[in-house]
Length: 337
Image (cartoon, rainbow, N blue to C red):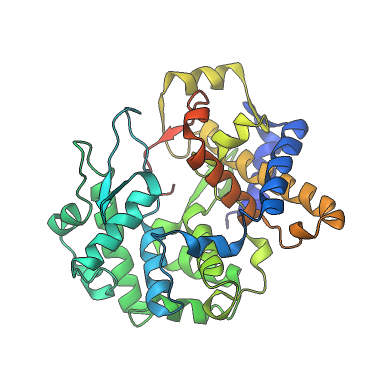
């Protein structure tokens, strides 16, 4: 039985959840914040390329960079919040997702052919350790898993796409759903699925964010042109639900709240974990619906979709990390997010 799409999975999970609920008042709170960001021009698909660590060229090598980075875009949290892995690049230290970007850019600057599919296919664990070397005593998390995925992705690119991710994009014929299907079918590490109440469900966090980053980087043109971009959902990770809970859009049962406060390590596929992820996607869908309703009187909201809602909430957490420290997040060591 094929897994439900992320959107349908989220609806099903929320309808059957025991420990997570979506609060309509909180949804409006989130919508207010996102609307403010749109009005101020701080969130749009064009903002992706403005970050110093993101590539600027609109070519095949940038598509290759995005594929590589989003293949490895998972699990950056540290067990001890006071001690983190940091990557130094061009005189600056970076944490979280930006540490991944910095490590990749540093490797390329050092002449390591990380964008070459054959190199990734054959890369050694020692090379991976060198590329992701931290400037603190805390190592980059899940290096063995990242090594495995680098080799997997290199093999798939060499075997199926002539070594170029751009060929995979072109095969999708401007459909993000076809591109998602290519990724999930051919790259096992993108197959972010589970079983909830006996029903196969999907989240596809990394696969969806890969497509979204291509769309945003290329401004919806060329390799980034997708006729069905609005069918993507938010990306169910561990940071966006933290922001949604902060705004009151997600409510946790007393039992789940206690678990999260204790810092317990959950497993990918746990019922509580899937409830949080499903509710995250569904909450962002409701925020998007609310903003589309408001867009009749606000031209700035004209291009709103779940991708941009997610981008906005993720940025909020990065900029106000200290303000959200009191809001616990679910801890999972997984290659899926």
